[in-house]
Length: 389
Ligand code: PMP
Image 1 (cartoon, rainbow, N blue to C red):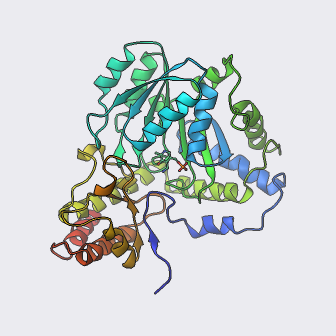
Image 2 (cartoon, rainbow, N blue to C red):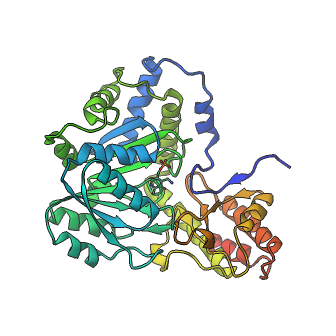
Image 3 (tube, protein in one colour):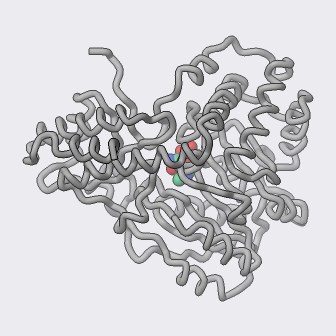
């Protein structure tokens, strides 16, 4: 009736009215003083959101894949050895990008889809020696598998003399990520997920060891556009509240970013992580109460930013259309091996308890229309109990 459905996919997500207003403001020059101030402030705020006071932020027009590409282009020299901790589709992508820039990639695979490699298996792989970098997907959006042992992995990487690069596209500003405290050397994300800004920004935070490795490079960076030598002076200039130019910054997206980062910091990083955990817990309680399995093989691996429930017996992808008809958009499966067996629900950014209840309600409607037999309201009751606990 309202002509608009609740967007509960794992990115893009629902955005706040203030962020959307910034997107609709008349675009100014990228060297106008108010824009220079907003860009400078956004760069300062990124350090606080990534919890990396000593790091260098980069804001590029592009998507999360560009952020991955930029990390690889600037930190890999042909022949460098890289270890990819693989938890799914986006880890495969990181391996392919690293190889494109000449890295010799070794992968540590999870024992099965829905699981994550153990620290022991990673340590064993690292013991071969000679790795320049290690990559990990903090939350693999194809499986909803998180990597809760990030601090331990950072310690292993450091001991092995390797840089740790974290794909935080589905985690930054939703999952706990203490970049500097844990010793993560680079983390990257995109605007459209827990950062809460429409798609179009690639965001990176490079710690001191990553910047030092970049400074030590001998081979030229294989991408003209991504080269940090081009972007570093731009980021430094805007942070010093001076205009600069290499490529025209996406003015409205950067305004929106600054607004959203302000909202994130106002909520506070710990409170924000706790809210994501609580809402994810409530949604998963509903999924369990409805008798649906999930892709992550253990509860402690399940992400706070999205859930990947399996279709129940006798129900297939047509469920998604029924859920949409009930007013909520959720996403299909993505991991090629299990694509048709599960679906994905994003719950990150400005998501509220009411959004969770609305989504569970629409899921129940959809399951009923798809012919699945269950106790109506069982999911809603479980979610509400968890939310009120
Ligand atoms: N990494 C992860 C974990 C992701 O979830 C995504 C996007 N879903 C990407 C990388 C790629 O980001 P983008 O689609 O913005 O290029």
